[in-house]
Structure formats: C-alpha cells, structure tokens
Image (cartoon, rainbow, N blue to C red; front, side, top):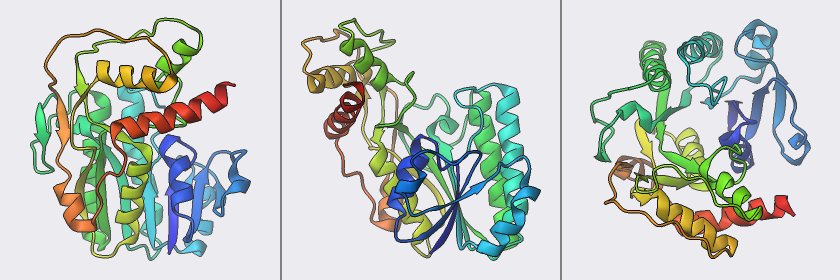
Length: 291
C-alpha cells in the first residue's frame, strides 16, 4: 500500500515508520533524520507551509492513504501555534485532494473531551479547555467536512497518554529516570492524579491498522482503557530502574480513560502491553542510552 506520512520524525512517527514496513511509504520531513537509512521509507524534504515545493512529487507518488501526525511547535500549546496547525492541516488537504487518495488518518487527543471524568466514549460531548484541544477539534471538523465532500475516508484517532522510548526529555517517564540516574529525588506533580497511559507500540499498531484495513472510518479512542495513578506509574519506573525510591501519595484514582470497544470491534485492535510491561521496555531503552 502507498502511504504518505507527515510528522514521521516525531515521537510517534519514528515508531510508526518501522511498523509500516512492507508498505511503500513516503515521509514528509524538514530534514532527513540520521536514522533514515535504517528504514525502507522514502523521504520528501519540505513542510506544510510551502506545499508547492513538493506537491508534484506527491502527486507522482499517488498515495492511497495519508497518516497525518505532524503538529508544529510542540510542546508549545499557545493560541498562535495551535491556530497555525489548523491552517497547516488545510494546506495538506489542498494537496491531497489533487491525488487519488482514498483515506486520511489523523491524530486527535483525549484533551478534546476537556475535564470529563470516567470512561469516555467517542460520542461523548467535546469540551476543549485550551487552545491545543480546540485546534484539534477544529482540525477534525475541517477534515470531516472536506473528506465527506471529496469522497475520502477519514479516521480520527483520539490518543490518550502515550509514552515509550523516544519521548521528549521533559515527559514524566524520562524525567524520573534521569533523576534516578543522578541519585536525585524525582520532581513529581500531582502523584494522586490518574491517567490512561498507553504504550507507544500499541498506539502505532492502532494507527497502522486503521490506515491499512479497508472499510474502517470514523472517530476512535486509542488508550489502555484503565486509569493508573501517577504515583503508581512513578513507583513502577523506580522498580524497573532498580531503585528503592518510592513516592507516597493519597487519593482515589479519578480522571478520563478510554472506551476502546469501537476500535476493537472495527479492527480487532486491543492493547498488548500492560502499563508494567510498557514501563519496563521504556526504562530498558532509556538506560541503554544513559550508559
């Protein structure tokens, strides 16, 4: 299958490119990454602000599907950057509709649900509370309307709290590992809060399945489907690291977690990695990079 990918050098993208092996993949990137030679993907130099520089190459490639991961400026969630990303999504679609593309898979966020507590269904009312979440909702609305008019299938994946090797260093798991490596006490905010942590391999498998399986369209949650308190997550990291450090915390788990029945019924997908297994894999990978 011919698949065009934006954002292929980001956290999710780096893992996804390898999952897509066996397909003919073209990746849009500002710079060819140093690890590009270890993949079978082709790399197209450019960005979503100047589509005229690579439009003809994409039309020549003639993708069957596009996986839109790109989100410029992260971790900047400001109004300016968020609104810019809505426009970049529009720019992308303006080029894609000139090809014979059949499906677009784009990434949303559980933050589209706002401060909802409990199990979130895809039909849940949306209540974006920041510029980033609002921009995701607006992008989804744009793609939904545009794809419907153009006869293109759309998959919108609301990703919950993904983690794994290759995260930004400011993310919770690498922050804790880096502190433990220096024999420091990790700085952890709100250890009693809870999140639906989903390991990166499960996320990329969901993306690949929805892109390559026929007759799969719509909005889907991608999460582990259960809550884990941040304090428990940190203690798992410490255990896998081999440290005796433990964080004490109080509180009953509360927060938002994914209903994944719709995705499972449509594709057969379900998470393979438990939180403990995902943390163990990530800590091992991080420690290899630290020594």
